[in-house]
Length: 271
Figure 1: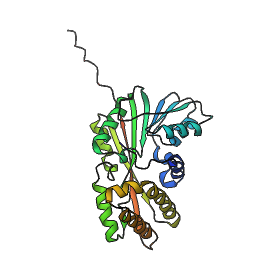
Figure 2 (figure 1 turned 180 degrees about the vertical axis):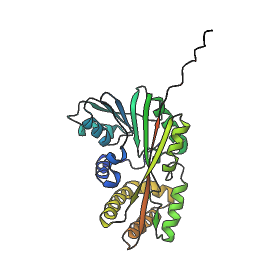
Figure 3 (figure 1 turned 60 degrees about the vertical axis):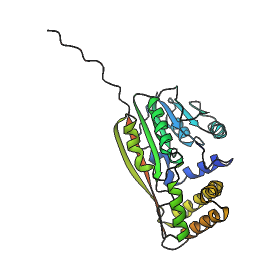
Figure 4 (figure 1 turned 120 degrees about the vertical axis):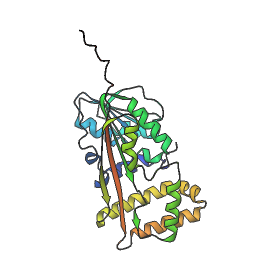
C-alpha cells in the first residue's frame, strides 16, 4: 500500500487541512465518548493532531497514534511534546495489532486503499478493540468527482481515476458495511456534507486541492500516461473552481460500531 501523498511536507499539510472547518476533528468525533481511563488509538494518525486533541481533553486517558510513515510518527512525537499521555509509532495497519483499546478512530485512511486492504485494516482494528470498545471510521465520498460543470478532459480523467483499484473515491458509503462485515454491532452512520458554496470555503478547498495536486502529480502521470495530460487536467480542474457558479461538494461519512463479546455458555436449569 503506497500513500500517494507521501512527501516531506505532508505533516504540515495535514495540520493546515485540519484547521479548516470542513475537516474539523471535533465535529467528526461528536458522540465518540472517551472516559478518563480509556486507551485510545488514532489509526493512521498522520501528524497526530487528533491524538493530541484527545490527549489534551482527557489527560488521564492513554492515547496512541500509529502511522505507516516513520517520518510522520517522528513529526507527531515532536508536535506532542508536553503531553505525557500520548505516544506515536510507525506500523502497518494491515498487520495485526498487539495492543488493545477502548476507542479507535481511523480518519481519512481507507480512501487510500483498495477494497481488500480496507477489509484487512478494519478487521485488524476490530481485533484490537476491547469488549464494548468502539471503532469510528471517517472518510470522504466523491472527492474530486462531485464537481460541475466539467470539461471533456476533466470528465475523462475523473473517470480514469475512479476506476483505479489502488484507491477508492467512493469509500465513504462503504464504511458502515465494513464495520458490519468485521462483526461490530450497533453500527450507525451519518453524513456531513462538505459544500464549498461560500467564497471563503471554496478558496480554502482550492488551496488544499492545489497542494494535493502538487504532491500527486507523479501518480497522475502514471495513471494518465503522460505528464502533459496530467498537467492539463490539473490546470482545467483548478480553472473550473474559479468559474462563477461552479458546484463542488463531498460527502463525509462518519460510521461507528461497537464490539460486543459473544454470549457465555448457558447454564442448564437444575430440576
